[in-house]
Each structure stands twice: as C-alpha cells, then as structure tokens.
Length: 67
Image (cartoon, rainbow, N blue to C red; front, side):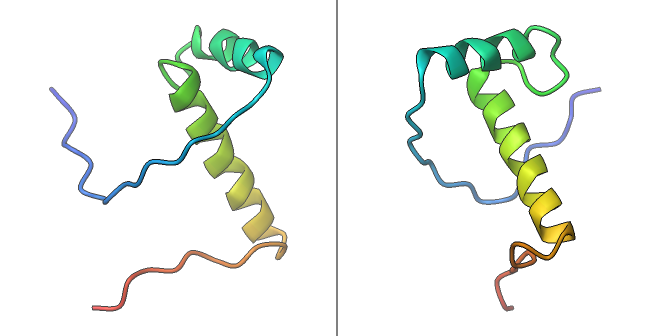
C-alpha cells in the first residue's frame, strides 16, 4: 500500500556543508533508516535535534498556524 501524500506545506532552504559531512550523510542514507539520500537524512537528523532541544527547553516548542 502506498503511503499518503504529505499534506504539510514545505519550503526549500539551501544548506552548505563540507564534503566530509555530505559523505557521512550519504553513508547514513545507505541503511535507509534516516532517509533515502543525503538531503532526506539531513532533514531527519535536523528534526530529531530540534525535538531534543525543545524537550530540554533550549528551543521554543512547535508553532502552528492559527485557524
């Protein structure tokens, strides 16, 4: 069964990093655990780190658009 389309609006950002970091992201992607490519893996790891910061009170909690 195919998974449903993501209905959350997304925006694109540009992130520059070193060759070594890109290679590490690509290596992590090979397992498919974090994502299927370096960009997916970077996204997953960034979200995970933000959640950790929120949990520790070091970052604001999620904000949702008012309806």
